[in-house]
Image 1 (cartoon, rainbow over the protein chains, first blue to last red):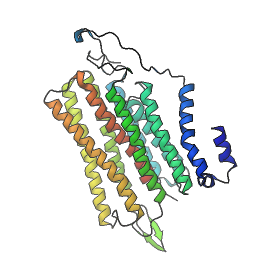
Image 2 (image 1 turned 135 degrees about the vertical axis):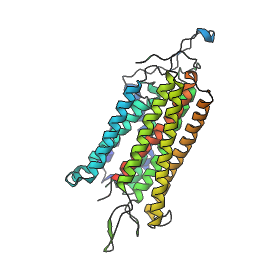
Image 3 (image 1 turned 180 degrees about the vertical axis):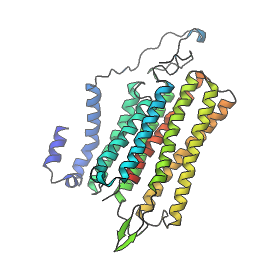
Image 4 (image 1 turned 60 degrees about the vertical axis):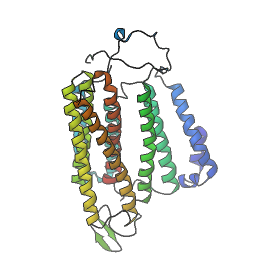
Length: 158
Length: 208
């Protein structure tokens, strides 16, 4: 990653960097390496595969549905927060005084809504970290894809 | 935290239910699918050679009104967001074995999803009347492909929800089968977060 950052900083610009196929080929490997590094250094303990308990009769089994999931009132609270954020987004869009910071504000609010839904409604905050790693892996690849395509072809958000 | 009833859950070598693992893998791959479509939209944004344009634009000295109706789309976004709330309430209901609550919230979610689809159909029709088609310019092509595929995903979600609702009506879903509702919920919430991104990137953030 350090080498990648050095190359990025020393190149004439992102566009120039992405025009070099030799660098482009290295990006997926660098992304995979970064994911591996994050997993290795993560303080979260991965519980991967654990030997199951000996088979018992179904009537004797103890299982709990939705263990650790929030209650309905928590879901409603998160829903209200999402509603307020959406209203705020639309207000910000129409306030001329905030036009300079519009991009930053909208992206931040959107990211906040995204995280609230994913962490609470999709239970990533409460479920096995394996699911979080899978989803974060997909998002990382998307970020790499967008970075390569948009930077190399000269597009931008604004 | 509430205490849920005891139910059966299949043992796996990973300690994680395989169906749930597969759903998350599918959602991770869907990130790339929609990432590609959003990237294409961003790439060709503001490169249309001719109207209609998404927002008010002066092109070759002639002013054109934008086709986007932000208040209307905000309501659509709000409807889809609230459908996520009702979906998760359906899951909470069946996890405490409240079958009546499950049926009510599942139907509510499906109806909200259909409301969103109706709004999208109305929006597409209005755009068509203003001259925007999938062939008209780069904006039309990338916009309709992106939002059309999202709408197709919502449609599939509505079908899944209605199937679950029929199963619930016939008494085939109890706390024991709550994973079916959870998996449908994961798909539905994913469709919702994709719209959160589309609403912000496509509708609200406009090139200066």
